[in-house]
Length: 460
Image (cartoon, rainbow, N blue to C red; front, side, top):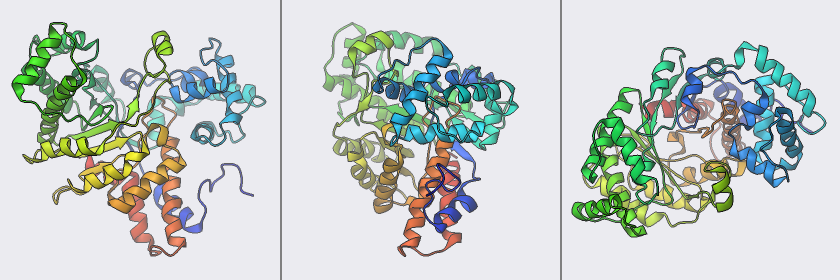
């Protein structure tokens, strides 16, 4: 019987162990998409309690706590930690069980399982280390895990002041990512008020669609000046409804007048802006990330009570293939399609995405079209292996830009280790079964490329 989450955790063969320990383990991390808070980075934050660090904003954990019959909203820090400890044994089979114990091991050198019996002891030990250990502030965490760069997620109207402050304080590159969802969501009740905020950030009133585009480009150029290498778009499905500029202008004017528009009109506006932005990204060599098929705020009562990003989102099942191909083609027609990473929260879309990507690769940029890693509800062992398998079957696994944390927690970097162990075991199994040659120079280089080198090259 193997040791619980011991040295060879998830590594089932000698080949897998060699690939991981000799090639993957010490590679830097390019965390190109996450939700870390820039002000906390700039302040080199230290957390007072493990409850604050783990449970303050992690809706993955909140969902699990609720499912186990507890409330995550407990004021006393220890009682909040205790409900998480009580939930841990029920999480066997869930990646949160592995992530939690990896974090206990890598940050606190605690190897015993977390449960109700060990809760008080682990709570006191982790809090003592958070208070006294100089390696548990943000910048030292970046250094410990060799975090080369972090891509935060930022609204076009953000001033990026904390990115500027952090620039000279840490060797890790803190890169803003341009996420203009609020400017695309014309059917949102907050759209008009958001335009006022965007207008304030650029110094002019936004009164038509041309002003929207002018404002977004002005902010995009500022983001690029501040180190931006990537954008991000959270979409229910790939939009594609093409209308001429005059018709889209009419739709925009209706919304400014307070009139209600239908779903087709909203999609036409979204298509127009997204195609325009894609071409602007191409001019600046910026990566366009597209996230599809997350249905958000499904519990309306709890949304009214707690707001968004509190653990009430789910996997959506909207069609993807036809409109995604049309959207990409609209930019490709004029040779203005940017580098893309395409994600779906629904694994049903993997084959569609991977096959469509192949139609838009080019001979100038290796791996120009990327199939995003197993994301959110799919970043567990089965989900990661599923994504690797589809990409390997239909594309070039060797050009994959690898894992991201997509996390709000500074303690989440062991998720890269989790991915790397799964990757090395996956490739190692092919070797052991005689499917590919036992060529460590070839495979070790491929592993290192997927872990870091490809991302560094892709994001320029």
